[in-house]
Amino acid sequence: MGSKKRKRKEERPTIHPKNKYSENPPDFSLLASLYPSFQPFVYYSRDGRPRIDWTDFNATRELTRILLLHDHGLNWWIPDGQLCPTVPNRSNYIHWVEDLLSSNIVPKTNSTGVKVRGFDIGTGASCIYPLLGASLLGWTFVGSDVTDVALEWARKNVSSNPQISELIEIRRVESNRNTLCLEGFEESVYGGSKMKSSGDFDTEVTPGPLAAPDLHVNKNKIYHGPPILVGVVKDDEKFDFCMCNPPFFESLEEAGLNPKTSCGGTPEEMVCPGGELAFITRIIEDSAVLNHSFRWYTSMVGRKSNLKNLVSKLWEVGVTIVKTTEFVQGKTSRWGLAWSFLPLAQMKLSTSTPEKNNLSFMLEGLQRQHGAIHVLQAVESYFCSHGWSCSLNVSSFTVDVVASKDQCDSILKNELPLLPKAAGFGPVPETCDKSLNPSSDRLCLRILVFQQIPGTLLVKGSLQDRNSPLSGAFSLIFQKFEEALRSKFCIDKRSA
Ligand SMILES: C[S@@+](CC[C@H](N)C(=O)[O-])C[C@H]1O[C@@H](n2cnc3c(N)ncnc32)[C@H](O)[C@@H]1O
Image 1: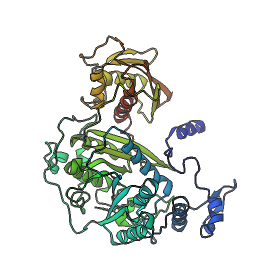
Image 2: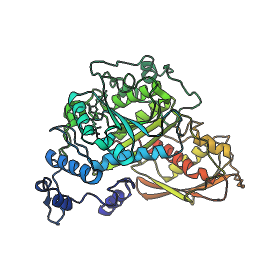
Image 3: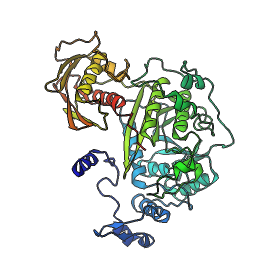
Image 4: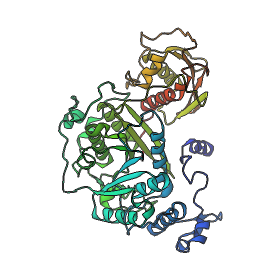
């Protein structure tokens, strides 16, 4: 039991490799010797390790202050009770956005300038994302907020750092301006009919893999608060991305549930009627209106169960791509959700060669009825639904798949609905070509499904012919395939 738990833990992604703290986590002992103000908060556990009391607001604030100073050269402070960010995990989100921007899936548009321009929704008193993004990567930011305290302290934190202050604008959102519902959205998101927005819609994209959102949940979760993007972003403004750590909770009681940490947080920071589902749904609706004004829209999501609804909504409003990631913070997880309305990049098949011949991922927390054989069948039906030739071998738990360039494109452009939602698995479509006919201009993969422990499967993909001109598409295709399998098998898992 112990070893299983340990194994699971080791497999979870923890910290982004580019994160300053990935190799060298903060050394409390060293920091205490360098910063006497931090000393009183450090104690030594029986194993001799230096620790701090994470439930002590003053300790966590002092740690954040000295990490920002020591590692980033930033002067920083927040008043008592405001949400105190932890530097390593906020840096993870910044580096994930950095990855999105540097990947070519959604090409950079000419409308944004040379410098990366981001929009931090709800920057807080800490102004943590703009400070990190500007100091680590030279990004420019608009940071928005609604409360006087947040705006006052965010501005103080910017002006205390003249080396980057030019890069950050703090923008007030008028809290007395209720957005109510965006015209046309009420029907589309909650009533199922087609959306009409003033945005420039890209109708080429078909909806993705997930089922219709859970209407019963959503009806109670309509956002009625101040504007978030529409009404805050100015006409003709363009951004490379937006990011948001939303108010996660529906009520103060819910916000006070975790006694293990005390990062503070006022009701205005932590609570929003309808919780994060309502808040992020509004960001999605706003994004459909603002459309190409942002290259990537992103948000943090606190509950995995909300991710399912949000991803469904995204496909409904016609995004071209959805990406998710998991941020592990000690014992809790958060998820990153990213989407775009811009056309996806064409594959540069002839020039790119794959970095790896093998890629894999874990499917964890599978329900009992979803064994390796079901996943294997789902693999087959996924590739077949995109017209790929498939050969399933139940004794070796492999599916060999072969595709032409058009069939690769079908996956990369989400041209067909991905895996069906139904609990059972659809039969392999009749259009599926079962004959495998590899040739030099085809992409050939072997997918292996392997049970690690009950409820956890390893899915591995191997490129069969590295010299094929299509081999450069392997990692992108495998990524899409992973998203589809995860959407089908993993997202139902409830997590607090
Ligand atoms: C969870 S806090 C995040 C603070 C900071 N970004 C962080 O990560 O520590 C959410 C922030 O969103 C702000 N907020 C709530 N509604 C907003 C809105 N409509 N527009 C902008 N900010 C909003 C709150 O005042 C609060 O500062």
